[in-house]
Amino acid sequence: MVSFGSDNHSGVHPEVMAALHAANEGHVSAYGDDPWTREAEDLLRQEFGADSVPILVANGTGANLIALQSCLRPWDAVVCSDVAHINVDEGGAPERILGSKLIGLPTPDGRIVPEQLAATCERIGDEHAVQPKVLSLTQSTEYGTVYTAEQAGALVSEARRLGMKIHVDGARLANAAAALGISLGEAAAMFDADVISMGGTKNGLMGAEAVVFVDPGLGDQAKWIRKATTQLMSKHRYLAAQFIALLSDDLWRRNAEHSNTMARQLGERLVEVGVALTQPVEVNAVFAILPEPGELQAQYHFYEWLAADEYRFMCSWDTTDTDIEDFIAAVGLMSGN
Image 1: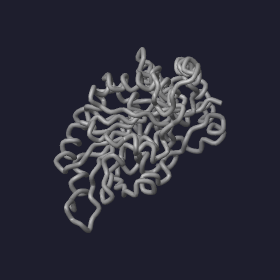
Image 2: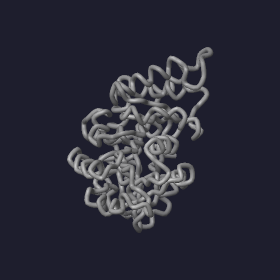
Image 3: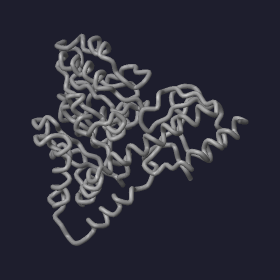
């Protein structure tokens, strides 16, 4: 099966698998007290700042929970897009595990704008109201759009004026950085981020994510939060080995650039056969109107999205030209082109 359902559906990049195999020798101490973890943390500090505090975790929901909990008091709330992963795709984990309210703002293209924040925060200081404390931004967004430096700067300026901390959900931060032609650290600095959830699983890893506290003060209790949220892995070296591979020889960028390029190609070819796109193709996601896909969806897995007849197509590090051309041929047959 060729799947355009998610970049989670692809296999593990061979360089990552080789790193896992190399780490699979002998005995080392558990729970992160090992050379692989120290090397991976050093590489993350090289990307995000010498004073940053990185920790490794197993999955994206856990990464977001740890990042957010470090910023929140019990009466605080998180402001996010209404389509943010934490709001619609994490099974209520932020509310259930953190006990914190999420305030979802309407975002037709996944991007929050500064003008939305003031009204959301108008009851700051009112003891009867939850206090918006963290602005959680997704880069790239759930609609495959990318905040520019100008958009990020204006938004963060308003959030700081309102006394908010900044969390970046970077499950696809690599794709955004590749699209903007900048480093991972620069992608975080655009938002003056206090803490980042740095994705790896969607970019060729078997299963590993990182939380990076750019504000080192927030990282003081990170290891206790990680343990309490069941994200401290015993055989930690296998998480670390994956990140060593990802951050070596620009593998993160090579994978992201490839998946972005494949998505642009897919978007262009869909338009050529008469399919309308609903969002600009900026990273590795394509959103398009495809009435009654029928057998096509059975042959090529992809997800229906929010609007009527709108579908999402994701490209991965291993998507090929042939995958795209075969899919376009099937679309053409379905539409009679």
